[in-house]
Length: 227
Image (cartoon, rainbow, N blue to C red):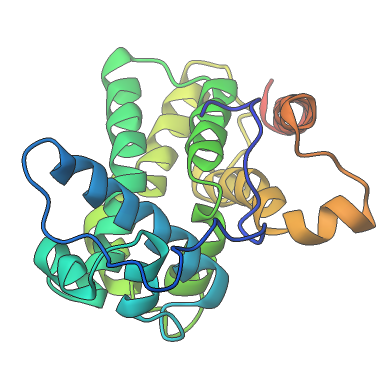
């Protein structure tokens, strides 16, 4: 789902659960493998973000997609490994897009904003999950994120901003490292704060609302970053 389309809230109502007495699915055959693996990843992403890694069991994830818990272990080995796959699945396309931007020779701030918000709209639970399990002290994915993902995500952005600065498209006094922190914050925090922003500020997160959010972020950064 691209930015501008309705993104389900990380704390929205649960999907329907399997009926009692129904036997969970076993090991799939052929093309069903990819679908079930994707369903497990999606369920885990939602539950890990909503409840936290420690409070979410493999059995609960399996129940959400109507499979035997052994299926989760079959695909991912352990709950910790499943969480790693959830982050990699959501962030690898973003890392690839940033790498392509580096190769192109241009990295306009509005394009970076669109990449970030596009990733968050396709994975609406992702900002909350990262806050819980990466950013906060004791986050179980902090070491993995720092070693394998950060250098290709936010860690790449200071160089991109410095290049834009050298080309005269960003303010000379901007520190690219601090600029990166602010850029990531202003893109992620509105999604983290959604459950409060909707009722307290009456901000809409429907298609039009997300589009206006992107416009305002770009305006804020253009006025603060651009020459």
